[in-house]
Amino acid sequence: MLRRYLRAFDTRDLPVEDVDVLIVGSGIAGLYAALHLDSKLKVMLITKTEIEKSNSWLAQGGIAAVISPTDNVESHVADTLEAGAGLCDEKAVRVLVKEGPENIRELIRMDVPFDTNPEGELQIGREGGHSCRRIVHCGGDATGRETTKRLGELALARDNIKVSFRSYLIDILTEDNCVVGALIFDGQLRVIRTANIILATGGIGHLYRYTTNPVGAVGDGIAAAKRAGASLELMEMVQFHPTTLLSPRDKTRLFLISEAVRGEGAVLRNLEGVAFMQGVHRLADLAPRDIVTRAILKELERTGAPYALLDVSSMTDEFFRHRFPTIYARCKEEGIDIPKQPIPIHPAQHYFMGGIRTDINGMTNVEGLYAAGECACTGIHGANRLASNSMLECLVFGRRAAIHINEALRQMPGELNISTDDPPSAVTMPRAECAVRHEYLRKVMSKYMGAIKTHSGMEKADQEVSRMMDEISRCALHSQEEYELYSMLEVATEMIAAARARKTSVGAHYLADEEPS
Image 1: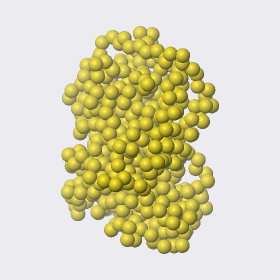
Image 2 (image 1 turned 60 degrees about the horizontal axis):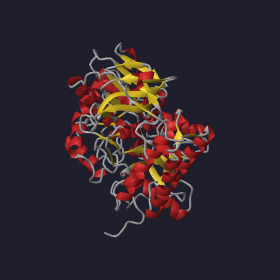
Image 3 (image 1 turned 180 degrees about the vertical axis):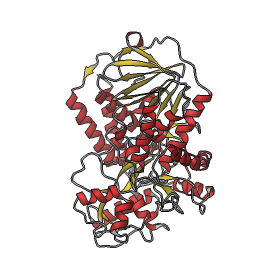
Image 4 (image 1 turned 90 degrees about the vertical axis):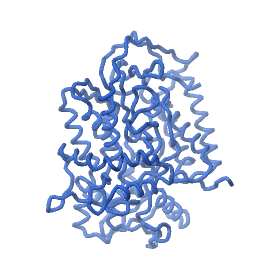
């Protein structure tokens, strides 16, 4: 039986702190939302690590927005809908695209250091799936780092925002489908009493063995929302990035080779030098990510090669070094003489299109609970995320959630009287066993729930995850590692169920053995 709360507690026995708004997560969505909340509100932002450990910090590509005079709203909308393969919410997409430019201008006012040309105009790049140039970036390939860093500086300077590092959200407290607080651990177990929570907890990358995500991306915010009664959607839609650097140095998080590299002319080749994307899609190397990922995997299977090559020889050394300084430096560390030599690449899990279902104001079906960023399913991405729409989504819907709270602030709940016990005959899980199960789950998800799925594989995943869930449900949970493992199993269960329920291939959900209609 699935738990409502992960551990035994009684709110009457715990220290309580009152805030107007609690934000969970320190990436772009959480920070930008915090900065748009009314300065009169008492805001707490908690993060289980540091600002530098978010997916936002690692994002290379940029932010998509209709900035160029040769671009237009309808083109950006059309590209997003095409990539989403019919599963996007067009109303939400139009909100995203129409409000994109004003949020870029807001970042400029906040002194986010966007790259400009000698005339002082924004440099605008192109990435896969986009029909024209509309990507703005910082530091060449360090957009996420520079944007998150600046937003973090501003948040830390605000008197009304308290940032609490190494603070872990265990559960969202509710009464009658309304938020009344949160149970957190920051060295001690305690309660944050609030009627307004914004979840900005990121993705699910470490459910997979190979991912571009930081270690903390385990889907625990999504699981906490589910336990609180929030609806989830498109849980089968997992995006794999086609180009990550294949290196023996990377054991947990693979280094991303941004799609923007192909936007500047790089070409995918097999080990014989053949450019195999020609004829696969009208955009060839700039096709949507799910198509490029499957093409690479199929080419590797056909040739028996362990990796493919990204040929960047069309660019000069000076251009590549200045446009992609982070990638340039990392490749040089690996002994790759770019742009003369090609980059060895392999697909890896990168982004999650599913998550906590929200409306265009970031609201869930639980009163007072909002979600923004990768943990949310706004309907923007559908079956496949269009490159560089993710940071824009963080900005647009993070701000929208903040504005909605400003306009309809729910008042502080009364005295809390919530308690729960451990399961009957609960046993303790050895710490080493928790790590073993975590790693085994990642192997199961990688093998059976990857970029190409089969019905028999999904059935096997279902059996293995169900067995692990049955085992952990009999345990008393008392550590962050145990909370994370339980949450990962909850999210994996939802992902597998959604994948098995969708009988035909669409976007990132690709079945090698579709059932006949």
